Length: 359
Picture 1 (tube, one colour):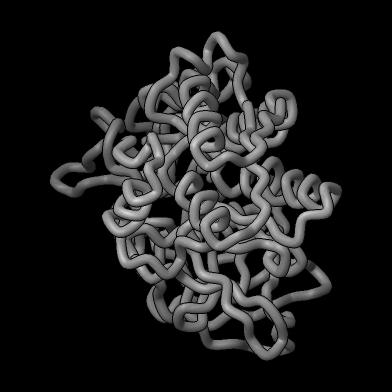
Picture 2: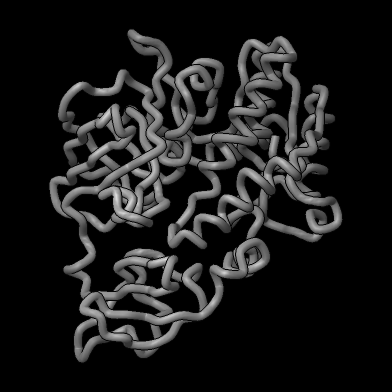
């Protein structure tokens, strides 16, 4: 229970259905800093709101101190990824570690029959067991962020909001149940990044990632200076200053070389990749023995695109060939779909890693 509308409604629905419900809230920041935060999950006010909802529903409520675990597994990983020249997705790491790994383990220790969350995805019973599907509301679908949920975790998890048509319907349930958070605004930005200033968080943990360096054209010309590689991601066109154009042609970030602290830029046509290599792959189906046609998402806010995938089991790498070359930012997720169903996914690798060259 994060203290928001979604998880509160899930608790209320399960209580209404007659289940014995235990509310668990993660405390991820020190109380002083958390109390001052607004609009983010797992902060001081949100813990208070979760407790008020639990009182309203007359269910036990526990606050779990996961500050150290969150700092190591999510915040430090976030900063380290930027220092490597990648663009991380901290919500995936949080789901992988603090939420699904740790909370599923706790729920099993308590003897619970399932763990329910307020995520917008659907769990469908298929011929081979539980399947992960996109939510009914495409605007709220969170399947991209849950690709790393293991088959065992998926079997133990429930997502009651996955079939709801929109957020208005969920808020209507909150109002019907008399929940005090029915009109609470949705959380914004990354929960541990105040006002979206993520480079400040990176600077605290990895100051080397915000040291200045050169902006270099793919042809080798030095076009300008930057104030830290943590400010750039592949495909970005803003924040390049005088290096934003080559004559009349706009330039975009084509790569980040962490070793030399160089930001590489080039014309838009130079960015798409014919083959994208993916590591840390989590399969929710039996890994394919040969080429497989499916759809892939390379960024959270894009529609799945047709592609052919090939799994190299020996190397632990997935080769993705989009139907049309695509821009792929290292560190982002590549999630595989068969229509509405999630087949699995992994993290996009830098080209140096993909070819076996030194990173």
